[in-house]
Image 1 (tube, rainbow, N blue to C red):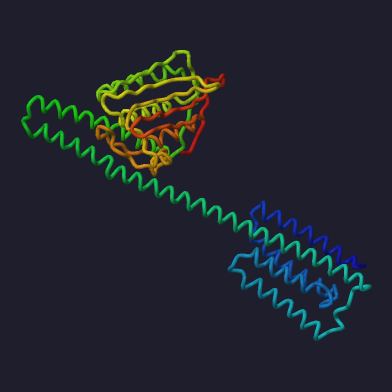
Image 2 (spheres, rainbow, N blue to C red):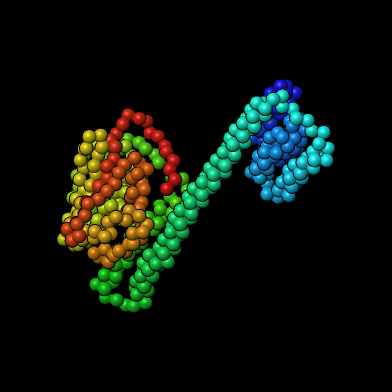
Length: 393
């Protein structure tokens, strides 16, 4: 457009704006760079207005873009500085041109140059508006998504808190009160030997139930409050689960339930020893809880391609169909077992969380009044060395 001086000025302004952007974006100099940019912006617009045909040029449209940029970038408390300054400057220039019309010279050599300048200015302004609007929209949706995630996390936290308070207020208080009552009977009354033995047996069972319940509560609470260390290693199934299953077998026999299991010393799986023992113990005790005396529970192991299928099958009460969808969630309420055993409703939640962070899968099949089968699908041993993974649960 035969305006080399203005082109050179624009070039140096572009370089300066890039420097300001770098300093504000990567060096943390946002506040001072913003002030310099706003002052530079006003000065440039005044110069452009004066040397680019005044009202006959596109500068007034650029002032609108400048107003939008200020609105999008400056802090809200600075609006009263930069926005009025923008308006005052453009009206001041319009007044100056109206008062001294001969001071503003039409710099277009021909109508085509003016057409090109207006077309170029429109493209730049439209592109900047689209860029700013897109940035604001994206920022809005990011904040909305983050707010939604925080709301979901808060709801889960409240659910966790309510569940824990419920456990502490009832599921732990009730058995401890029962134990206290048994001890008071033993201490305050001269009971016959048969009555004393009966109370001692009930006291032992209550104590075992409470200890089991407390173990689950502490394991679950720890998992909610901190990072859980998962130590994956090659585990021989017999060495890992034999003692756990012997303990469970004793508990089943005390209730009059037959417990059958066979473990091969040649089967090796990849997992965390403590977590696997906790999962199997929970599933087995859960089966005992819902199986009637005279029933049967079996622990089976099968090889499925590159995985090992561990299953616990009982002939107990089964799970009603309406309870099955939320069985592994906190929404599932604990129920009394066939011997009035009480749990915290956390056993299956722990089983699911601990199985999945080991890289396994958990599931079940059940028919009401016919029994249930809970199974784990764990990867077979690999040649990788022992490794430690951290998981938030």
